[in-house]
Amino acid sequence: ISVGDVIPDATLSYFDENDDLKTVSVHSIIAAKKAVLFAVPGAFTPTCSLKHVPGFIERSGELKSKGVEEILCISVNDPFVMKAWSKTFAGNEHVKFLADGSGLYTKSLGLQLDLTDKGLGIRSKRYALLVDDLKVTVANIEAGGEFTVSGPDDILKAL
Amino acid sequence: QASRNFASAAAGSNWISVASDASLQKARTWDDGVSSKFATTPIRDIFKDKKIVIFGLPGAFTGVCTSAHVPSYVRNIEKFKEKGVDSVICVSVNDPYVMNGWAEKLQAKDVIDFYGDFDGSFHKKLELTTDLSAALLGPRSQRWSAYVVDGDVKVLNVEKVPSEFQVSGGDVILGQI
Image 1 (spheres, rainbow over the protein chains, first blue to last red):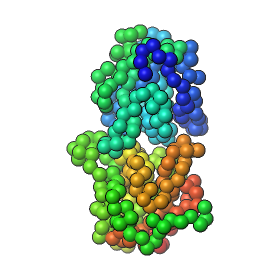
Image 2 (image 1 turned 30 degrees about the vertical axis):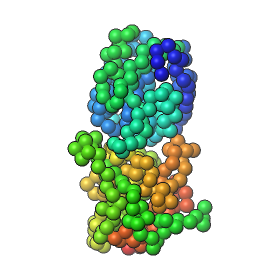
Image 3 (image 1 turned 120 degrees about the horizontal axis):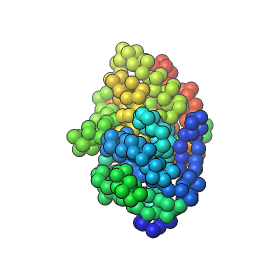
Image 4 (image 1 turned 30 degrees about the horizontal axis):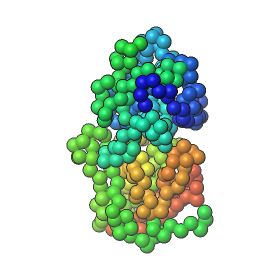
C-alpha cells in the first residue's frame, strides 16, 4: 500500500459493547472520513502493548481535534484475543480494536511480516496510515517490528 | 462425526513417536522469548519419563475454555499431584504470548503449564484439529483431554463438538487415572 492508493476493503471482526461478535467492512467505517489505521504484529507483545497502542490512545483526543474521525488498531489475531487485549488498556475512548484473524486484509495491503521463528506465524508489519475518504495520504511502515515512524506524532505532523 | 478415527492420538499410541518432530512453545513474555532465543520445547522433553495430564481447547480467551475448562483443572491440581501426575498442561492453537496473557488473566500460571501450538502442527500430528472458521477462529484444536505416561496415551477424551464440555474436564479424567 502506498500514498495515493485507494485502501482495499475487507471484513474485520470485533466484539461490540453488548459482547456480541460482529464483522464489519473497513470501507463502511471509514468512507467519507479522515481515519487513522495502525497495526501491530501481535496482541500481548511488548512494543505493541507498552508503546504503540498507548501512544495512540493518549493522542486520540488531539487526532480527533484535527479532524480524524476513526482510529483503528488492527492485528492478525482472533476477535476474542483482541477483545481481551483491548481491555488491558485503561481509559481508551476512541481506538477501535479490529481483528484480521485470517490475515487476509493485511495480505491485501501487502504488509505481511513473517514472524514464524518468534512463534507468531505470519503477522502484520507495524504501520500507521492516514486515510482520507478511502485515499491513503500518509503511509508510515516499519521494516520489521521496530517502532520509529509508526506512532501518532508522525500522523499529527501531517494533519 | 461419532465414528471419527483418532488413530494418531488414540489410547495405545505413543505421542513421542507420533509427534516426534513437533514442538510446543511454553507460554512466555516477549522478553522471556528474547532471552531464550525464542526456544521451543520438543514433544519428547515434555512427555519422556513423565506422567502428564494434558488438555487442549479451541482458543485462549474464549467462553467455555475460560469459564469452565481451565478452572476444572486448576481446582483439582492437588488431587492430580496426589495421584503422581508430574504436571498438568493446557495447550491451544495460540501463540505463546497470548497464552501467557491468558494464563495470567486466569491466575493459573503457577498452577498448570500453558503451551502454545501456534501453527497447529502438534494437533495436526494427533489428528485433533477442527475448522472453526464459522466462529472466526480458523483452524484450531478440538476440545480434548489425555493422560500420557512416558509418551504412551492411557486415556483420551474428545468432545463430539468443541462447544461441548462433557468428557474433557479435570473432574472426569481425575476419575480415569
